Length: 196
Image 1: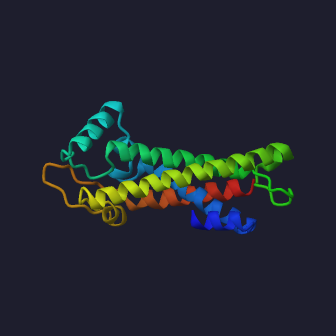
Image 2: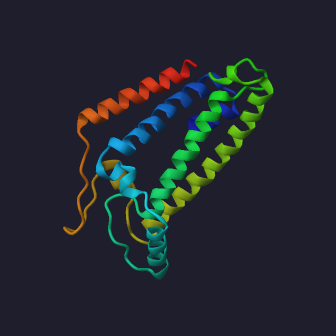
């Protein structure tokens, strides 16, 4: 995200586009991994309905210890979905964006007019600002959990390991072949899209 911001602000559009294609591959991978990944990576593990969110927020407000889960809590799960949606929207807009000179358009800009591509560039900018706001909220939530609840969320995110009571079902990893297949499909899809 930092590279995309810097290259966009400094009109390094070749680098910006390449960084965008890398991010596109990462987002495609994360969406695939949400269906075939380990237990805590699957959307079915952490996307919960309004009732679960209401209970979770109520427990949080009352200072109750929430039922320990290995993966995302109900609120965090929807934060992940919002982040993925904004990233997918931002990347899609970037594919159709036309720069002010029209000499470095996104690979799909050929399907729309110059004026439409310029309008998309404006939306691309505003969605990025929304992403920055959501990233800020995400970082504040991580800090809240670290400082107030004394719950390290970053360590388990990086290592995939978290201590838990015996009553909590442990995480199950996905087989290595699924990881390799998801990486290959994501890279191929991002490459094909980058060719326009």
